[in-house]
Image 1 (cartoon, one colour):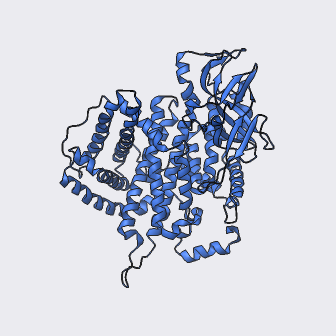
Image 2 (tube, rainbow, N blue to C red):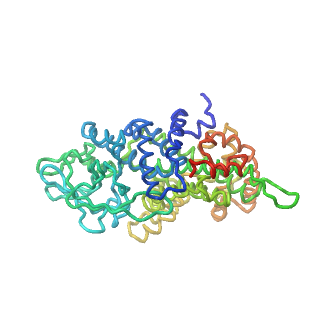
Image 3 (cartoon, rainbow, N blue to C red):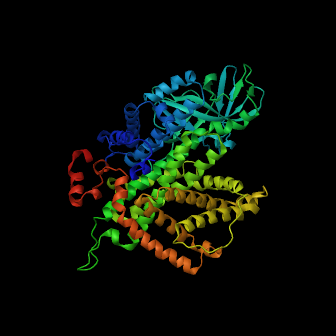
Length: 583
């Protein structure tokens, strides 16, 4: 069996594709400057999206080629943060839905405009009243004889937040409750609409109000309401699960089609959740690359004779290296999930739950990592030139794109607890944290025990128990994913850098949950102390492997163009002041 290199393990997709995207997304014509207002940055982002579409190839092809789609998200997050909100709608949610949920002839006119960038794609799901719990949306689509009419029945049913504020041509997918010709509410369905025409003007029956300034991300979010917006019969994205007769009466193909209807309608959300998790992992890797490179150069004068490097200061070293181990573990875990998604039925419950778990496990850690990098770099971390401050906005936007990320984690954790009900908790036997096999068993024991402790709250459907199970569900989601990540690290531990990552990841996890392991009889006081001592040694060992790990991230210092990456920090900053293109 051919050995996988460290860079191949961390990267997902071909190196040529990643290099191409780095080149496209580092075009200086779209660099954000100090003089640009938020409005100018929004317009610049749309121009950059059109450039990306023209250079990288067919939008619909990218949307359905998952390694390419994930790579677009990753490099946008690293090099062009203003693009991230746009690519989510344009590539994944609209082009992906049109490519998979209707026939090619029907989708062709819309996809042609999306493929050449003459129209921008965005999906309209969330509403004031239901937020992201879109099964409870109130926007309606009714039959009018030869097509559909979409309406907003009350103010709380207005679509809240889709990025359609800027007046450019739009191909949109609108989610609405379909009330068929027999007056039956057939649940949530998707409809394609040209929400803005070629001149950017709203379509008849559409009212768009742009929302206020956002300090963390540059987005043209808006409130949208409908007053008899008419769409063609062919605009319905049925995924061939049902038919509508000339009287507007819907007939399901079979009972299974009815069951699959809602998962089908939101199937691209499953891909999108993983794409956003992937891009936050990329942001975390870039932040660590920048911060750790800086920390290995930055001399800290502590006394007249003592001038250690910043990376040798314990609170910098311990924080950034445990974050590094956690990020590499989540990158490898995320790549495994991304590979699984490429061949999966996106309406399958296990597939949906897997993506939800991954999003919860990856995204919150990425935010912590980027935040730590920004803080440890002190004043240097505050400036956009050093990129990390911009990553904070991407993290917040991705984590809250469907509301609080913990909602997904709790829903997925609850589903997981039901799946694991038959797995008995282990006996309270002491384990040795120095033994790699025992570490896996300790993480497995935590997963099984939390699932068992959640059981009483799963046996009744009442609200009290549905609320009480949430802390268990969140702990289970994290524990299950951490165990899976550790098993993957073990699988690749023939690479010395991954073995070093594995040791820090596992021991840091045990140290974080030491009280839990003590109270459950799986570690004693001596074992907890052994964990702490082992973690210190493991961090030292990971530090020795740091250059190889950072090289495997495959970042280009010239493309990142962060002053702190330069050996001549004053000179790098001076260049930014004197080059006209910077201003």
